[in-house]
Amino acid sequence: MPEQPNSTPPQVATRDLDDLQPRLERWLATKVAAPRITELARPESNGMSSETVLFDAEWAGESHSLVARLAPDPENLPVFPTYDLDRQFHVMRVVGELGAAPVPPVLWSERDPSPVGTPFIVMGRVEGVVPPDVLPYNFGDSWLFDATAEQQQHLEDASVAVLASLHAIDARRHFGFMPWPAGSALRAHVDATWDYYQWTIAGGPPSPLIEDCFDWLDKHWPAEEGPTVLSWGDARIGNMLYRDFEPAAVLDWEMAGFGPPEIDLAWFLFLHRFFEDIATGYGMPGMPHFLQRDRVCATYERLSGYAPCDMDFYEMYSALRQGIVMARVQRRAIHFGEAEAPADIDDLIMHRSTLEALRDGST
Image (cartoon, rainbow, N blue to C red; front, side, top):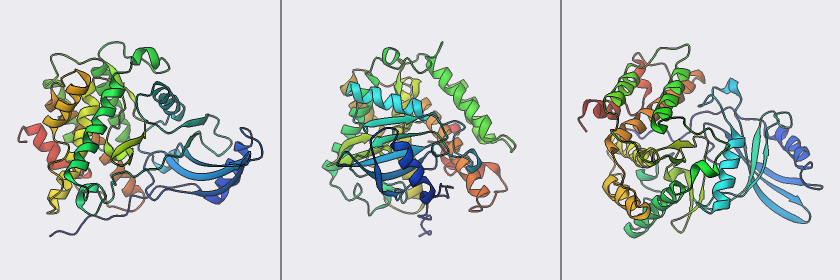
């Protein structure tokens, strides 16, 4: 059997906690009386986008478990060009107020970078477990892999119900602080993805495969577009906290926007396929019975009354988006000395063979 992939996440340049703690405490004193931060740490798995810090604080005789998300330093080659944490804060606030999905309680959004060196948001901490990315949950020896078939199915159904509930929000009414697409929401979404791709390759070679896939999208564009809904953007089980196989909190809203429901559904499905393809490549059984497209779409239709369409198109779009992200992550790894630049630029894409198969119609 091939050697398993490295279980160490890619390097992320992070701030010094000894410097951050007093600065964060001074800032907190502008919000509450006489606070004291008693513990500050990073989660075991910190993201490659915004930086997450866990901390406990005391004020008014009570202890509070909190989370701060900080925008990354541009010098650290962040995954995305901008990090509008204030928008994320207000998306979570609205979702929570409407009861559309469980989200962490949002407390403060600080747009001024001077208190800690970057904008940040503070939320209440929610207890729960996350299906791991490293090593992926479907590699075995994870709480989800070891669960019963009934528990896995319950988690799948409950997670799809979150998507249906989010998409049922009157998005134009409740998210006026986000720009509503002037025409086709799908076209606006794809155009924004093209702009993101252009940003990732600035100063470097383009990806022939990625550009082939954009051409594929234009040739297979859906004849009709579904309703425009709030798109979570990074809709996947790895961005949910669970308790007893029920979603306890929906996390990571930095890719939130508007688009047809299929954008979230296809991303939700493709990220599982992404991990399944890795597992198969390493000779592991994976979880092929989990998050199957037909069943997930049927569950979504039953819960929402809307039948997802053109899922082949949206699967390609999800694979393309993930390809751009993966290539950016690899460029960061090369920058930090964790990888060497490949001879073929498309080898930056971990799931290159999947993208090629989707492009060629062989899967």
